[in-house]
Length: 320
Image (tube, rainbow, N blue to C red):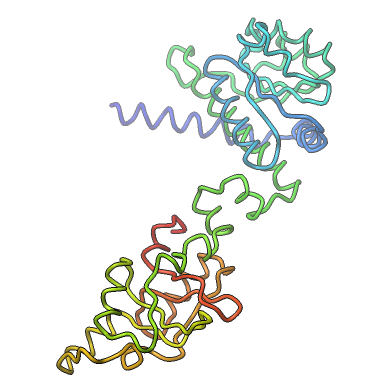
C-alpha cells in the first residue's frame, strides 16, 4: 500500500514538472535575459519551504557564474532590505502568491529600483500583480492528500529554478574551466586546476643520492624520507639515475648483498620524468600508461630535479 502511495506522489510530481516544461514561453526567455543583463546580484527571496528552494537557487546561480545570495523574507524587514540595490533582480518564491512576509516587501523593492521576478502557482495573486515578471509553475494541487504540505509546488519550483540557472549558464558561455574556479575543492575543480607541483613532494622531503653512495646509504635515505625511490643527482641537481625499492629487492634476490656496491650499480639510467606544470589528472594517465608498473616519477624543471611525484599522493589528491 505504501509503495503504491509513494509511486502516486512521484508520478504526480513528475507530471507537474513535465507540464511546466511544456508551458515555458516568452516569460522564461525574458527572465533569462534579465539575469544575463543584471549588473548587480540576483537576490533569491522566500520563506518556509519555498524559502529553502530560494536558498538552493541562490547557491546554484552563484556556482554557475551569476552573483547571487539568499534573502530571508522575515529578516528583510528587520534591516536586510539594505542589501537590495537598483542594479539587482529579486527572484521571489511563493506558491500561493499571498504570503504576507513577501507581499509586504514589494513597496521596498520598487523604491530601491530593483526588478522583481515571481515564481508562483497563482498568476492572479497579489504578489503576481505586484511583480515585474511572472513564472507560473502551473501547479494547482499538492501531492499531499490534504493539499496542504508544499510538495508538488516546491518540486516544480526547484526544477524551474534549475532550468533558469542552467539556461543562464549556457547563454553566458560558462564552461568547465569557469565551473572549476568556483569549485576548487571538488573533483572537477581539482582535475582542471591541480598540477603536479601541487601534489609532488619537494626535493627536500625526498630521498637524494649520489652515484658513489653505498647501497645501504641509499636504502636508509629512502626509508627515512618515507618514499619509494631515490633520485641520483650530480652537484647541479641534474638527474643521473633513479633507484627504486623494487630495483633494490630484485637485485638483492639475485645476488648476495655487497656492502661496497654503489647507487650507480643499481640505478636506472635515463628514467622517465614528469614536469611540474602538468595537470595532476594528466600525470595520473602517465602512470597508468607507463610500459611497466611504477609508483614514483622524478619531477624535472629546466633540467633540474625539483621533487618526486608518488602515485599514492596522486590518488589521495581527490582527482578521482
